Length: 171
Image 1 (cartoon, rainbow, N blue to C red):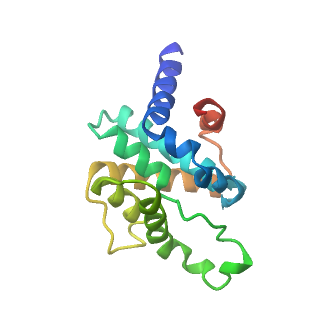
Image 2: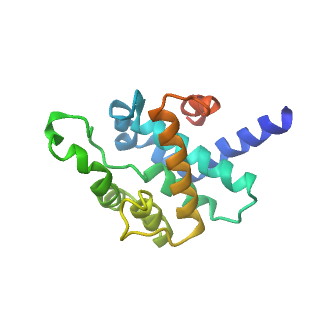
């Protein structure tokens, strides 16, 4: 039991270490008001994806660049609007296709990104965005973590209940 707790604490520590500036940014915090899946905010979703990505790499003992993994995961849905709003009516059904590009543009305007981080953000909707293929382990991990977290949120299955506390512990 204590090993699992240490494992979770290590993951949260790494998320704070590599993504603390993102977590504290006003734009990232503003994503708490936008819903991603069912009743989960974009901010909470992104934090869950970062946590799940780190968990996957630890469980599978993958050697990944932790900084790129965390930052790419936190910024993968950095589109900064509520895609359910009337302002996006008509585009709502295309959100899955174009939001990675919007997220990348917004992230690049605010942060200096590595090529790996750019690939994580632009390819996380693969295979829907078939022209943007994950090119590194980190991008594949975030893509898989995003699919898992999104499915759990959409079906309202909170298998990641421990990640619900990420928000309060990372700050």
